[in-house]
Length: 216
Image (cartoon, rainbow, N blue to C red; front, side, top):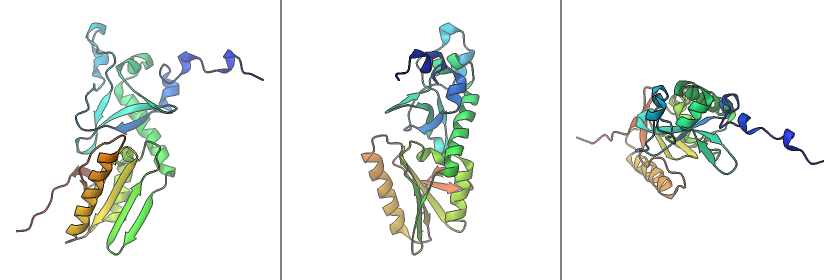
């Protein structure tokens, strides 16, 4: 039996218009360095001073920008200032909801783990648009520090949206460091949704740009 209009979700209750519907599906998504937008504070400006259409952008670890998206069939809707106005919420509430959804997904999402002698690599490439964003979670950074450290340096790459890769770097293994950097750069160049071709390092639970140690 064909469903009538009453069986469909009313437009006013779609995530783009209804905060309750949006709050349970919002997710963070990295963007390349240089991505522009607004932090959401424009909500406090008079209507004439607001910038409709601007995406809401926040700065993540190591200066990596990320946005908030509403996942859809085949494409995601990037959250902009007009969404905050329609929902009647501020950017901090949007951030909290998106991070809670990411943490919930992370709790059951698998990692791939590979050990070859002293070399140990873990990565996430599940292809659901949340892999790289996992590094936003303090609990993920803590897990990587435990699994790959604590007596070793930890390299991290987020070359594209659907890949987070981290590796243990043992003392003197410059060859592996070079191979890791080449891999991250190659994946970023070939990606449909690239993020960053650089290699980062996990230091005291924080992501920082890799500082190469030169001999003396």
